[in-house]
Length: 284
Ligand code: KIV
Image 1 (tube, rainbow, N blue to C red):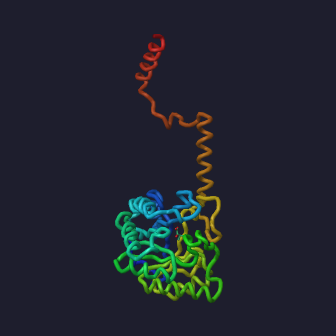
Image 2: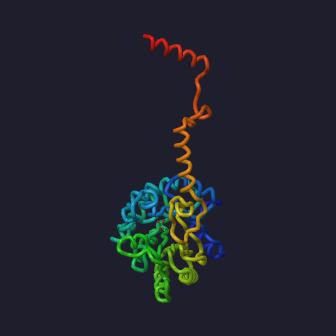
């Protein structure tokens, strides 16, 4: 697979080929996502919850995103790497938005940035796109907003709200977004939005009709005990890792680890000499 670009992602939509995306926040995960051949990696501000232990993405900073993006970029050369713009890093002015987006690209090495919001953030999308930085939009359920007085409920449950989300998406496309993440909307809304846009839609809990799908790696791998209702488990790392830690503890307690196969022995003669030297030392 050669490096994925915006034009390759658009071609995939034209040909009806589904795009796959997951999150990575570190080097080893990035290596594995590349090895598996997924087209896109998201360095999401979900890093705040799944890696840093915050309750929500609000405390995540531009510096945090840059730090994790650098590690991901070192591990994955071919996937198209999108990094999230954190809470309040794209709200104050188009100038500050451009400065923060530029840092994520220049210092972090991401291929694109992503930001949440509807038509009200279109001027920020335009500011970034106009300087040549690819921007992915994020509509439907918006975790940053949901964390500050919003709600984590499914969006687009009726004709009116589905239309409003499509209008937002169209305004973002018009402003220059190259793609949009649609989070936790009804299947019908996901289909309507996908059909109404030229840019690829990447769904998360938005039904099967989106041009691609993104699921957090920690969710699809079962790293946690619980996952959102739309997540299908492809592994159970929670159990695998807990079992491995328990087995390690059991072996150490029973003096089964390290055994000779996992230890380094001295040359026989040197060992005998060492024992002799110690006996002399102890007698003195
Ligand atoms: O931060 C993140 O991981 C995201 C996904 C929910 C798409 O934005």
